[in-house]
Image (tube, rainbow, N blue to C red; front, side, top):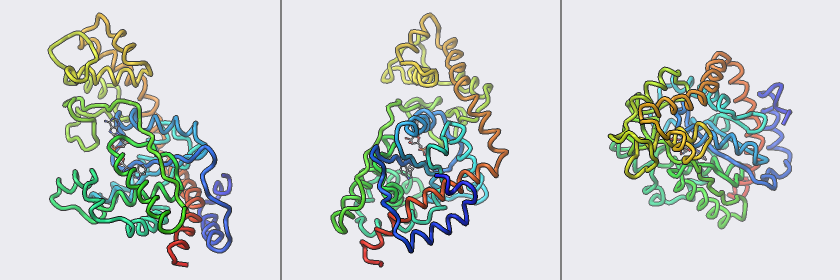
Length: 357
Ligand code: AMP
Ligand code: TRP
């Protein structure tokens, strides 16, 4: 949509006025559906995020007529954040997403807090959610336990996630398995709202990533995670070739030197095979057959080569984009403007149904 290209801010004001005073045509998703997903601006994405989520996001932007990706900063403050750090993490995440291949011409890329409709719909949906419904959801169970007590924001985190999705009448939501229960809440809330106020929201479908979880390089029984305190456990998309070589060399394997794929009995070596196959764009069997005749030490060099080859262009692009703050801010401002164009009429309809106007 070219309306937002030249001067995002005044045009947004115009759209705000337009949406309030003049009926906009339907903002229903086009025939093929609408994809929505979000990622928190906490740290640089790691190899698991890239292979398990972002690579899929790039594929989806070429498959669906309407695709929206959000840097969910409202979600990130459910854990304490340093403001200066958060500000730079948002731009770093924008740079990472663009470098991984998100194309702002194909997908709307925006910062969640720039579209205040998310918070307002979240309030409405929160009033349709019972307390016990939230108590058993994974985010709360995991993170409130770590802190002994969690905030109200952490508790209602999944309601905000439902608002993110429903605000755009999204039909498809790519998520990892850990998010399935959150998506079920979004489906329930669409059903509850529609039942009480008349049909407005489609029930969104989860698109589960087919990539096997990437495991920690230090402890292959747990997944590679941003919150891991051991630097050697995760490969980030900004790691240098030397960092990658060192981390792969130190990756935990076992006492058998042959390379086989058996995640149950040989989780360490199998994780390397998963990483090799996914980064080289080949099947697991092909990866194992390329390892024939190599011991795990020599195989690690092959894995390093595949990872370096895949991540180098991404790292270089992130470094280039980080210097171009104005460009990143421009992409996010335009994205927010386009997101608001879709969100405003849906929220307006929801407000009417509820009886605010
Ligand atoms: P998170 O880093 O937990 O905010 O996750 C962001 C996205 O990356 C979600 O869609 C996760 O399912 C996905 N993801 C996170 N860690 C991994 C992993 N180790 N392997 C594959 N996908 C992952
Ligand atoms: N909770 C998701 C995660 O931690 C991030 C997220 C927020 C999201 N809003 C969303 C994902 C809406 C999909 C759709 O990964």
